[in-house]
Image (cartoon, rainbow, N blue to C red; front, side, top):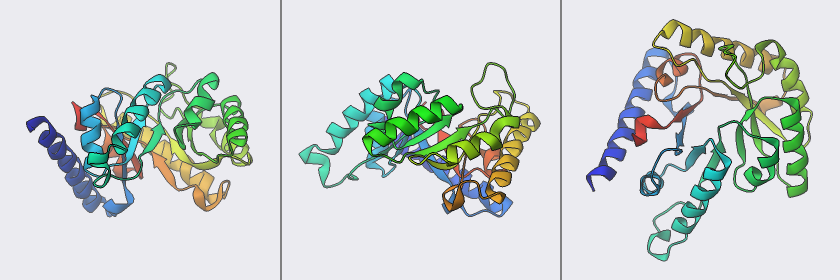
Length: 242
């Protein structure tokens, strides 16, 4: 039981930190959404966050997404639990997505944070049309310009956003980026600030309309800076589950 209460305590700590940071930078904490990243979490811990009412869950590998989503579907439909639980969870695909895994992903998730090439966007659009789906997609931008990282180059982001926004089965919902793993807060801030500038440019040009409203940036180690730089979605894993 103590492990479960620890999860609740950690969520409360993160929520309080979000509130404190928002107060300092003049933002409304209700405008910040947490996606709880379950990739290293045991199933019982995932069930606990669902019991606590957190239904936005993130995975970075399709195989694990399929496994965990199946387990949670069974859990949500257990007679002993059903009356006390949400009807469903929202799965977010946050990791690199291969084109041959698109159909499987769309059968589970309506949120894909990692669209970083035109070919991937075209594959998602085509598969979504066959499934009669309209997934919410985020253009992933490599704002840190690290060669080992996925993401569209900064200089190509606006044009790629235009191309994605023209695809009839995709809803271009926002941008996603990942900051470098460094203790240098100035480097992290510069990455997030660049993503926010791109976000504002795309929104000003009305490339994707009113649905383009989210900045998915900030993880357990840097979400406070991400909030200060305009993040609306935080991808939090180890701060909750470790």
